[in-house]
View 1 (cartoon, one colour):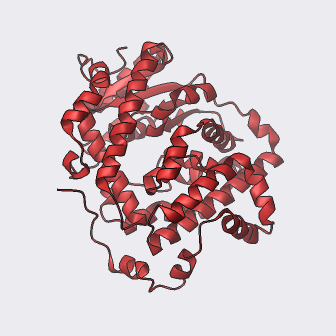
View 2 (cartoon, rainbow, N blue to C red):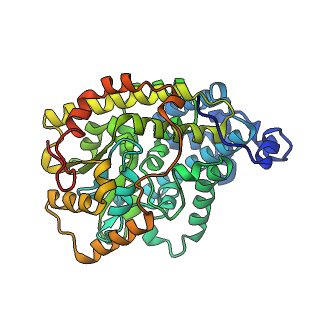
View 3 (tube, one colour):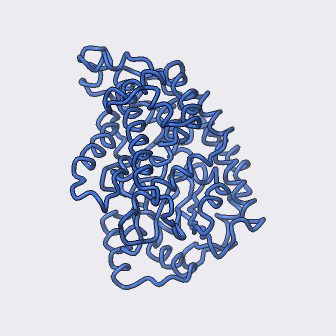
Length: 424
C-alpha cells in the first residue's frame, strides 16, 4: 500500500482541465524573474530593474534556482501554477514593502529581539500543541499568520489591519479547500500562531518551498547553502512587527530550525529552545503525509516514497547533529528543554509547568487556567489524527530504528520525570 491523495472536487478538476478562464491563462505564464519582477513593477508603478535591484543579489540568486525548478521539475497543475503565481507575487510585494519600510524608518533595525523562545522539535512531535499552549501566556507574543505573511506596516501602527487579515486568511485556507483532508492534518488560518517559515520565505531561502513542491534542484541548493540570509530576514520581520508595541518575549516555532541551530544561535544568541521528541517512525510517517498532501494541492504527480526517504535522511542527520550540539555544550542545558510526545499525551500541563520551572520562570494561576482551557479545547490528542503509515511512504522501521538510535537513546529512553523536560 502507498499513499494516495484524496478525491478531487469537481471545481478543482475543471480548473486543472483548463476550463476556467482566466485562471488557465494566468497559470500558463512562465516562472521567470523577468516576469515576476515585471508584474510587481506594473502593480506598484516601478520598473522591473528597480524591483530586481531592491530584492538584492542574494534573493535574485535564490529565485534563479527556485523559478526554473518550479517550471521544469514541479509538475504543477493549472491550479497549482495559479496558486504559485499568487504566492510568489505576495512574497515579492511584501519583500519590497519590507525594504521600503526599513528605508523610511531605519531605526527599526535597532529593535532588540530579547531572549526569544523557540519551539524546535521535528514535525508531528507535539510542537504545535506546545506552541499553542505556550501562546496562551499573555507575556509572550506568538506571531499570527497574517503578521508573518503581511508584516508591513507594523501592527501597532496600523489602525485597521482587517484587509491584511482577510488576504492572509484566503491564502492560508486555499490549500485546505483544494486538498481533501489537509485540515485534519494541520489547520492554518490568519489568526492562528504561525511558523517561522513564512518570514524566512521572504528571503526565498525556505523549506516552505520544499514542502509545497518537488523541486530537487532547489532543495539541494538550499541545503548546501548558507541559511544566514533567511535568519536575518526572520529577525527583520520580528523587528518590524514589534515596532511601536510594548515589548514582549517572542514565542516562535518551526521544525526547520533543527537544521540550522548554530545559525539561529548566531542571530539570536540569548534564545531559549524547547525541543519535542517522538518515536521517529511515527513522526516520519506523519510529516510525510502532511508534505504529500500539501504537494497534491499543486501537482497530480506526488511520489510518497521519495518524500519518505527525504524525511528519513533529513531528520536522521538533524537529530544526530542535535545530540552533538548538546554534547559539545553549544546547546547549554540551562537554555534548552527536551520533552517527549508521550509525556504530552499523559499530562501536557505538567510538561509546560516543568519547562517553565527549568527556565526559572513563574507560571501564574491565570496563565495556568488559560492553558487548561486551551487543552480542553484540543481534546485528548496532541496532534491531528490521520491514517498514513510508514509503509505508505516506503519507510522501513528497522532502518529508522538503526539510523535514529543515537537520538532515541538520548531523548526518548531516559526515565520520565514529571514533565519530560531536559535531562542532558
